[in-house]
Length: 211
Image (cartoon, rainbow, N blue to C red):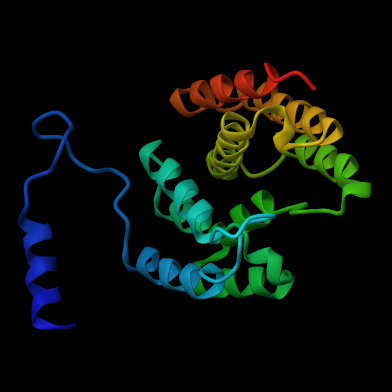
């Protein structure tokens, strides 16, 4: 580490906490494994575009991790958030996550990463199976799964605000309305709280679009 990096790290460690009540202690401390997971996510996804865009997929992973951390997620959940899409590179990559970061992280990644980007002909079936399987998935995966859904729904809303209903075909639009409503109804019984409240508002905006 360079001298300037050492000085910056020392400054960050001694700086007062920003926000929060006086005397507040962090309960979801991130350890060195998070740094390693971030490096791995950057290497794996920096040059991978998000589906049907020219934007780096890394932005989505960082957004999901941020949502998990802000919602009180622990280190394993934050790591899994960064790595939840490693299954795009095959099942062996998920097994490697388990070897590097532990079985709990691997379980979360397997639960969240199922059914990623299926072909349109199988989309409804794959997504239906994914939604149906959420209640029986490991409870520690629910926060990461909800954060993933919220991040994806935000992208949909951003597209709609920029392009209106023409952002998606009528079939795609109605499918997205069905999928996100099914997820919101499922999470309502599993993980109520601020993140679900925001997701519900975003889903309502998607549902308000006439297709």
